[in-house]
Structures are given as C-alpha cells and as structure tokens.
Amino acid sequence: MRKFIPLLCLWSVYCCFAAGGPATLGAEGPLQDELHKAGGVQTAAKPKVKFNLRTSEDPEHEGCYLSLGHNQSLEDCGFNMTAKTFFIIHGWTLSGMFENWLYKLVSALHTREKEANIVVVDWLPLAHQIYMDAVNNTQAVGRSIARMLDWLQEKDDFSLKNVHLIGYSLGAHAAGYTGNFVKGTVGRITAIAEAMKCEHERSVYLFIDSLMNQDKPSFAFQCADSNRFKKGICLSCRKNRCNNIGYNAKKTRNKKNTKMYLKTRADMPFKVYHYQVKIHVFSYENVEETEPAFYVTLYGTDADSQNLRLEIVEQIGLNATNTFLVYTEEDLGYLLKIKLTWEKVSQPWYNLWKEFHSYFSQSRKSMQELNIRRIRVKSGETQRKFAFCAEDPENTSISPGQELWFHKCPDNWRMKNETSPTLELP
Image (tube, rainbow, N blue to C red; front, side):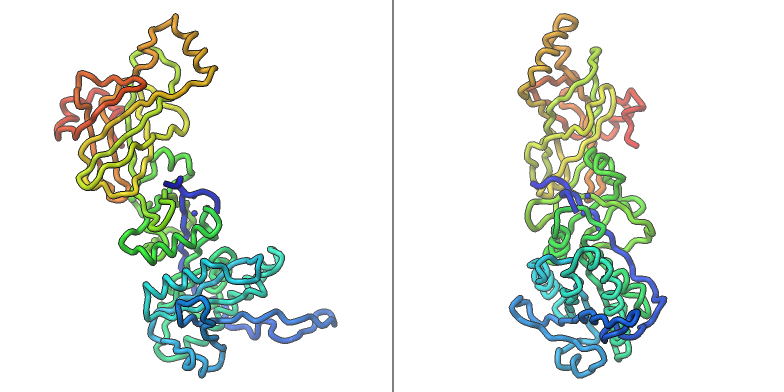
C-alpha cells in the first residue's frame, strides 16, 4: 500500500472544486489572431487555441476540430447540443505533445458518459514555452474558451449548466479564467492538480479512477496539516469536512480553499478504508518516554485486516489518550474484535546503554510494561464508532513480544468501568 497522498508531492490527496463565477466581460475581440503594432514594431500573432472534439477512444484518431463562428463544423463533428460537454485543458508541457494521461482521461469519460461531447483544448504552442510565459498565456486561453462557450450558447438546446471544465496544472488557471470571462455560470470546474499536492499526474489518475470505479469512490478528509491527519484526528464528516474526490465530488458551500487528505492503494482502484484508533496508555511506573512498536489486527464481519502498524508521529503519551490512523484495502464490515501486538525491535546502541543505565533504578519488567484497558475505533467512511474492552479485565498489561485481545465492550461499560473523564470520547 502507498503512503497517504496532501493532492503535487506526497500520496495523501487534496482536491479543490470551484464553481465558475458569472462573467464580468463578454468576448473582447480576436485573441491576437492578427499582426498588430506595438510602438511601431510588428509583432507576430500568438498561435490559436484549437478545440478538438474527440469522437473515439482511440488515441490515434485525430478527432474533429470545432471552428468558432462556423456552424457547419458542429454538424460535421456530430456535436450534441443537449448532452454534457467536457472541456479538458492540459497544462505546461516540455515535449510540446499531449501526455498519456490525456488519452486515458478521454477514454474514461467516454466510458462513463457515453453521449457526452469531449473536447480537448489544444493550446500546446502556448504551453510549450518558458514556464512563466506559459503562465501568462493562460488568461488568453481562458478567454478563448469563454468565446467558444459564448458562441455555443447562441445555439438552441445548448446549456452552460451541462459544461464541465477539467483543468490540469496550468490548465486549471485557464479554467478559472474561463469561469470569469464567460457569459453565465459554468456547470462545474475541476482544478485537478492545481490545488492538489501529490506526485505529478497522480491527481489526474485519481480523477480517472473516480470515473472508472464509480462503485469504489475514494474519500478525502479536511485537515489542517499532514501530521494531524497521520494521527487520525481528522476523520470527521461534520460540516462538509469529508467528500468524495474526482468526478464524484459533491459541491459544497465552502468559500475558502481547504486541504483534503486521504490514503490510497498503489494502483487502481485507489480506494482504501480509513480508521481512527484511540488507545489510552497507562504506566504505573515513572517512565519518562517510550516508543512501543504497536500493531493492530482488525477483525470484521466481512474480512480481517493485515497486521497494521500504529505510526507514532511524535511520541506515545503515557497516562493519556493516543490517536492513530490505519487503513485497509478491503471493507472489513462491522468490526468484532482487535488484536494488539507489541513487537520486539532491535535497539540502537544508545538505547541499549540507556536501558542498561536505568536497570539499577527500576526493574526491567516495569520499564517495558504498559497497560491498556480499551481501544476505540472510528470508521472514516461510515463514521461508525466502536469500543473494545480487554478480553481479560484483570490482565491489561503488555510488554514487547506480547499481545492483547479486545472484544466489543458491553453496552453499559461506561457506567460500570469508566473511572477517568480523560478517557471520554469527544
């Protein structure tokens, strides 16, 4: 399994979906299509933005080019005025050619939306530039797309509500400009990678996955930073704090950009199941700090998990509640029991010396012994909460190389067994 992606440099995703705003400007004349004079000097016209209607999933197929102002091109290309229309806007390019992800996205859209118009916005000559020049060209590209949409709106049965702009990298900039320049409000704008922090192109494949695996939608969770997410304290869906990602994302009213995180599988389908694990760790001896190698195995009605390591982000808090994040590739169903294991690990020489030095002040057993009475688990996908109590209430201690079993707590366990308010779930 991959580590979590926030969605341009790790594997924890966040996505930003922005609604296109009303236009503030209409079409403002040609996009430098002709030679013009600047200070008496002739300057070359910028290349035109082309609109390629992809009528086949075959990447070798050239598609059909729509020509602004020429109604015949709509008929010749078979443009469907009443269907959904997707505009795929690529980003900056080093090669000057379309990348493989674009063809895969076209194919996925054809599979999911068989009647839709899928238009590839070809601005390769403007994108195959020094990066900052390409950035400066995105506004012109956005204006060109807006002009195309304004022209299409003049046709009977065409609705801007059926338009979905999908922008990747600098294409997200162009999509945003389009939303500002077009007359009306675009149905949906998806900035696939501009606001996502993950590996290059990974965000595109997450979007493709959302099209191809509709029955396995990936969930992302709002979180302030990656450390908090790794601790498992951000698996709340209250007040739109969680959402599907990609094509299945639900529109929300959040006006500010938010960071959304998730874990993924290495390959499609990327969906995993997130769990928050809360453990209250007791120590009856004066131990300054410890880093136990804890692992849990979750047993459910539908499947059992692998042995899952509890990642310690900072350090274990003694006589305090510790929160962890684990995830599984399978849906475990309703959780039934948990096995907690403290694995023995090889110790660095410094830790061995420190352990030997402390041997004379307290017993070896007490140094390596912790007590755990209960484990609490919350499912991120279902928001269901579970409480598990130690199988043997008289034996809650655990040391390296040992394991403890936990079963569903009785319904009235809080009244009978709870002794400290610090153990209560928030």
